[in-house]
Image: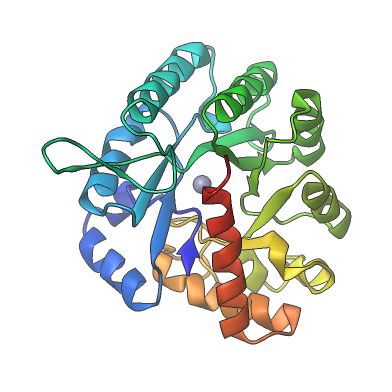
Length: 275
Ligand SMILES: [Zn+2]
């Protein structure tokens, strides 16, 4: 299975990162996609991407809760990284490149995580919109998909995607916890729904959504170290818990966990062949 969204570079894993990754691989995870937050998270993420080529795979982007007055400087850093990476290889995202000395050069799998967050702070709402639009253009330009974080801002993000108006813009609504209507809208826009630990919560609401949509529209994620699934709710989340989420999603969709696992893996891989 592919873990499509985990902050494994987070300092919550500083004590036992190697063991945490071992547990993940033992649980059946073959790739871990890492969303970026801002310039401070890039080095730790790239170190893991270099250490585990084609397995721990980086995204690049500016997270909406990190959008402040200086967001243009942050986006300049994002753009620099994109230029550095996509000029070093002919195939931008399918596999990591090999440099002349034989070492692996990680390629970004997506622009992420980007979007809007109106839950914590609305001070920089206009800047969040601008940063999102600029990063959508970067995704189109560099043939990448986008990993969307939206909290209390689903329809605002939809409006921005429609404003971009480019059918090549695709990706994942990460940590999707919306209504069936919102799920349908995301699917109509050509996006997949990233389903995580909230699916296992009693009042998570996904029991009113997942049974009514096609399995081909969903991918799995933990968002670790946040949002641990039951029975670890409230504790540190980790990649090895993806099978707990898969089991719950399979139950809600009334398929076997094997079928769910292979379909969601195919869904995730289809994003990497996006050109
Ligand atoms: Zn995240």
